[in-house]
Amino acid sequence: MVIMIRVDDRLIHGQVALVWSKELNTPGIVVANDHAAKTPAVAATLKMAVPAGKKLLVLPVKGAIDIFNDERGKNMRIFCLCRNVNDAWELVKNCPGQIQAVDIANVGRFDGIPVTEKHEVFGGNFLTEADLVAARNLCQIDGVEVFHQIIPSDAKQSLKSELEKKNLL
Amino acid sequence: MKVMIATHGNFAKGIQNTLALFIGEERANRIQTINAYLDDSDYTAELQAFIDSVQSDDFGVIFTDLYGGSVNQKAVLLNNKDNVVIITGMNLPVIMEVVLAEITDMDELQSAIENARNESQLVQLHLQEGEQDTDSFFG
Image 1 (cartoon, helix red, strand yellow):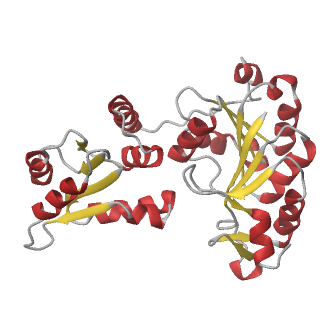
Image 2 (image 1 turned 60 degrees about the vertical axis):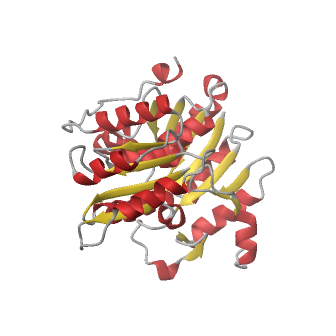
């Protein structure tokens, strides 16, 4: 069961991974990212960020979907990292009932697309048109909480409310 | 929990700036900093004020740069409270772990320091050839 997907353009990194996997009590961490999965050096650097005692899989998005729908995956508490909203939507869409929450934490800062072509949400996060479509889709799924929350002691800010506020819904 | 970072020169302010990237500006700015010896001002008053400000039902952490440095020495001499601790030889990992998890338990603080200590290493990349081992992930 995926307790939370965190959408973070830095994927998994150090103390953030530590705090969240502690907070969510997730022995398993899955990075769902096509590029990382097919580039051994990138996967190796991501492994550097795994907190002691946690297990990591670096998979392409399709591979992560298989794992989340696997019987063993359903019975394990998992924290998933992906890089963009569209990947998060693919995971939610294809793993019905297996994902509890999506945290849009840090997006759209390092993909090379100029900020002027994107929509800003939650101060400092930037969505392309494709991201926006995915974001709207995510807001419509029952049973999946979608919000922005950098660290556990921050309040969760609802994505739906933010999109409404910005007339992006 | 109240946090102070006290160092020679601009290290404290610098690390606070870096922290903000991870924990947000608001949380980073709540950490008090002392950038000692940039001028003639007496920073011990700020150290004392910080220690005084930690209420008996609260917990204070002062991070300092060097064990043998005068900033740490002064902090140690001024600290008269059980609920204020000083962690020296500070680095970014230990401050992040303590601040992010808001650690006030002594054993957990030791653990955080140990983790941060182990972070200092010669980096060797271990490339994994072939498929990910899903069995050991679930096992």
